[in-house]
Length: 138
Image (cartoon, rainbow, N blue to C red):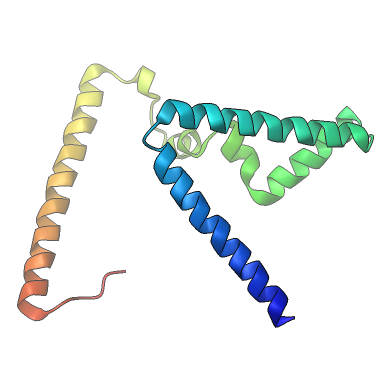
């Protein structure tokens, strides 16, 4: 049994490293990356579609099964609505298109100020680490 685990672990490790290398290379060519990704996604869904046809799933059963799976995994709302929209609705934020130019500029200014404060805090932490030794960061 240990031999099987080591083979599985080695296989997982191989594909994990391969993915890292491929992603690093393709990241330098976003158009090629998009094309390869698009083809792979279409082929994946084609396979799912054909499998559903082969096992005789009706349209209603396909919808029911997919909705149940997406609800169980938390993907339903995330995929169809998006986290950002849900969060902005909970916070009662306006959509970007509804904001005035002044509101957008004020938000941008606030973000810039937060960035400056964060850099200041990072500098203070680095000074403390130099003075007292490294601190543990979570």
